[in-house]
Amino acid sequence: MEKMRFSLYRYNPDKDAKPYMQDIEVEVDATDVKLLDALVKLKAVDDTLSFRRSCREGICGSDAMNINGKNGLACVTDLRSLKQPITLRPLPGLPVIRDLIVDMTQFFKQYHSIKPYVVNDTPAPERERLQSPEDRKELDGLYECILCACCSTSCPSFWWNPDKFVGPAGLLAAYRFIADTRDTITSERLDNLEDPYRLFRCHTIMNCVDVCPKGLNPTKAIGKIKDLMVRRAV
Amino acid sequence: MVNRIVVGAHYGLRDWILQRATAVIMAIYTVGIVLALLAIPGTHEGWKAFFACTAVRVVTQVTLIALFAHVWVGMRDLWMDYIKPVGLRLTMHVFTIVWLVGTLVYSVKVVWGM
Image (cartoon, rainbow over all chains, first blue to last red; front, top):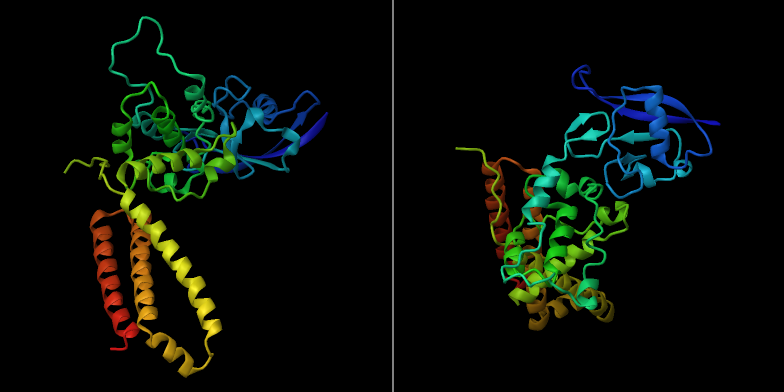
């Protein structure tokens, strides 16, 4: 058993006039490996603490938060690699609902704006639409996104213009469908992004790449979208 | 007026290419001018003779035009990021253009010794 120190962002809009940081200690044992394990123990100490969590293995993307100043998933972050006191804040740039829970409406609005589904108006084949292994390979590094919002909420362009800039997660998804050989509206998708705000707010600072818990590279995908636009225009 | 979020201006690529192309022009000029200035005599007369050459003036003027185009995209991006009221932002856009055109005219005077 060992004690770990935490500094937690707390805010309950029903009770608190403004957010505050709560210093708290919790006893963890050898079986508590990830940050989420400690959060579950913290919840047992103070059951008013609110955070989202579900799969606890980096698939659902629910427990994204700002950990010691860097966005990440609590369930895949090694507890003992963190400097104490471990400071936990909600994802930056989104409205806080309570404690570590943020309102992701804006994030998903941007995601939906890029039509995150294959559009193909040709008659459906008897079985599925097939892809060659090479074509399928194009989607690697794109389809794995779990929409945890770590990237978009670490992006200053998204902080300043969350209503207009699609953000790294949305743009990664946009390229995922542009790159899909089964999709037939590539030009329409490029038209949708040809905008000083929607795509070109990205100034390639690569915060998104730095924080992605799945090791994806939205900056590279954004670069490929720009490449295609150049190829279309020049 | 209903306060709606409107996007879809259907431009941006040209500015993005412009910013990169002008950056390359400025980088090439910077390297070239440093090498040239090291090669010529480091006196007032040496510099005067160098910048009297028409080719040098043309290249310098082209680079300055590239600089102003680069500044336009960069400053416009700043206003887009940080200035929210549309009227104020448009005013800043116009001010930036007027200022850059003025600078361009003055740069012609300087480069061509008029």
